[in-house]
Image 1 (tube, rainbow, N blue to C red):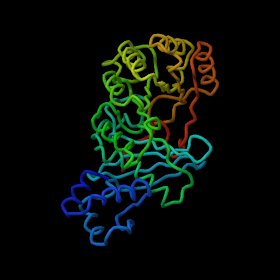
Image 2: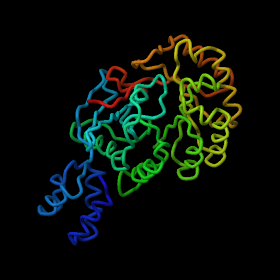
Image 3: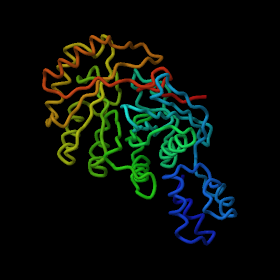
Length: 343
């Protein structure tokens, strides 16, 4: 929903100012999917607002549910015919759900192991399209009587957030606006492939929002092969930006590391990763998330479980905080690196 467009539509009709808050409350807090659901509005106003300021800019194409019920992936159509995917996840037992959202249709970074990267970039999403993914899941949970509540949002879907920084910044303001989604900034995280200037700007603009860095290798030759943006922002530049981020925010940074069999999962690679963390400094504020590669149409292969455990143990012996992240939604192609533009 474009709240500015809604405000203009209400002003044009000469509606009292409280109407805006009334509608935002119904949409963002109560999950109203249409103006017809907001019975406190006069019928003529409900009819006028549907074409003037639509509640939802995205159209549901399909929703897939994982066998364990802890992941749901939605394909959502954009107004120009493109489509994106977004995922609803339940990482832990309890009633808390996390939404993984996309910021672009496709991606320009071209990480070699990522299905989204194979697509290339179609276009950036608008702030409205970014936020409406969260709104979609709020509406979905209400409609399908999904037990629990939406508590966290992660920008870890399709696209590179810092390639469209201004649009992402605007969406973050909407997500954390108490009058709209109202999430606490500490319940939101943004993942980047390593655009160093974006990391530094992010530290100034959103010091309470979480930051994750998709690292995947800690030597420049290998990382440039896996994550081509490393050619523009090599590891030394990246370490500098992370040092500045930690100094300004004192917030924990998550290093995402996809384990690829025979490529970046050997003891020497673990030692290089530990060395990178030491160069950044403040290792107590850095946590490594190891991700066993999720199959995509590429020439890579997942590391065996024993290799992942050995890699984790070696990092822990070096004093690092490490987790092997559970991959939810792999059976519906909804896990890390598997999102694509659907037909």
